[in-house]
Length: 102
Image (cartoon, rainbow, N blue to C red):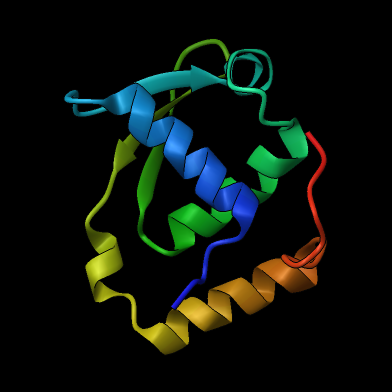
């Protein structure tokens, strides 16, 4: 079952790559945009989806930097819950089937 949008998969891949063997990573909005070439709208739409699905945890860092941790809460999310989260995300933003521009 593919629930994540392409943008959410891309943001998650950046977070996973940056965490590596560590427990968390601090990434700013500018890092996403300029270092990883993920536009701010994609990040803004992906983070609530990734959090709601229990894939990541986010806490505020200093000076508008967010600290990301991978989460195991996704184990408790049912398929129906995941589909509902995606439906809400689609209703709040652009359709997941619309191609993104980078």
